[in-house]
Image 1 (tube, rainbow over the protein chains, first blue to last red):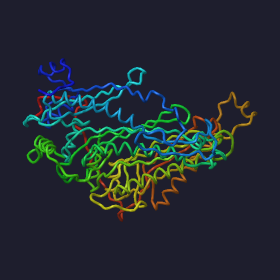
Image 2: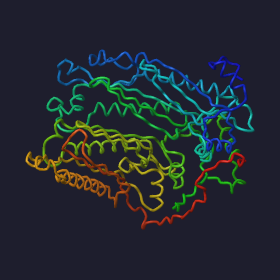
Image 3: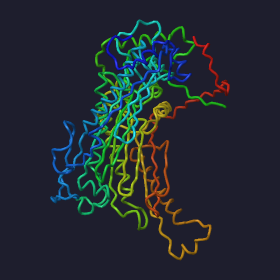
Image 4: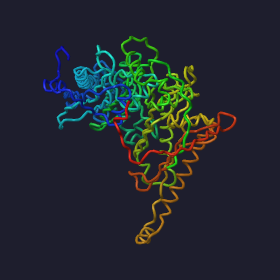
Length: 298
Length: 279
């Protein structure tokens, strides 16, 4: 189908040309797709294995030495040791910094896998991809992550051959039907990641350990500002990365996940991942009656 | 939503073609929203004239000085205080984010709560909502609720309104028994009154704090209260009790009866699917 140079293996092209369709849809979702006039044409997939080289280098070298280290063009916030003593316990500086290179590598891996899936969909003449499932799996312990996206390519019955890239959505079946009825058209899946490194300074370490006392300048129970700031910012960044992909459309059914890992004492990485469906309003909401509560007798 | 009886008015296939046809047109930025609600929840909201606005969050970590959990009597005040303040600050941050985005409240708030021996961490994520097209309101007028959008809808239909999230927590020492008591009770089936009394003490303090928070919001009650109680995994002689729920108040002069309809499903237990029946 496609005349442009492609990543698609020759075997995949032969398989798509054979005619029989494959689908990742459940029977119920398959039935709902047919009801909507969407005809499944193939289970399409995209893979990409990315090595996060900079990730495995153990970036703790230089921790606390300078307020100018850390992020490359991203967010940085510095925390200066108030005690004026330079040692492993009293590093001069604590920092929260955005790991832009991790975000860039992640985006490259995800986008490559996504565009390969979309390319497969284009090769089977699909208008869209429904029921997308995305996974990220570590390959052995080598710092390599495999991105795997799959979904069911569909054609819209009684419409011309598509002239633009297929749309995509995590939804399928009745949930997708309700999206249409509610006045939204699916545009694409949206996934964003933000990565924040926290190099704690002495006050933060004291407060996290509960050993502050007079050294923390704030004995008793106090808010741990550096961690709160990092946790808040990493959520902000994930949302702003996702917003940058919306171009005026809306994000629906979002899921925000945050994972914190501790590499060594006071050296944390916080990753935030936001996924959802980019949708575009094509009509106003039809008036919906207030739902009638029911009690079911079984 | 459409059904087969109204098929003459609504054709699903035409609607899908119309929707997907709109993707080929360039549209002006009409003000986008972000939301973690499902489409069912969004339709529920819309049925009472509300809409999602923005995905918002709030977080706080509070320290607990070392050594508070092991020896002492009565309440572990540092832990109870840290828990209360962490919740207070996380909710305040969520208020600010919601107000900034034009929300009048936040529904479906997911609460992640972690208690460690040296700090408490509270994380909140939810969707800011407002009456369709409403203008912004001050921060102190915004409510935060862990009720789902469906429950929020039912609450509003019944004439009530949510006012905010009320929490109460208490962590209490279970006094160590004397050596004589330990030896005497070693081979007995006996209630450990120190733990029972500590749990009662924590329960009363936590429930009272939650109730006090509701009164401060001028609420008349707390719905969907969740409680979590039990020993602390990092301290052998401490117990904790946490209660939280949504404060509500009657917004209309009287409670509106919703009169649920009783239904009996005629479906067979065995679900069969016949592809030939599809149109």
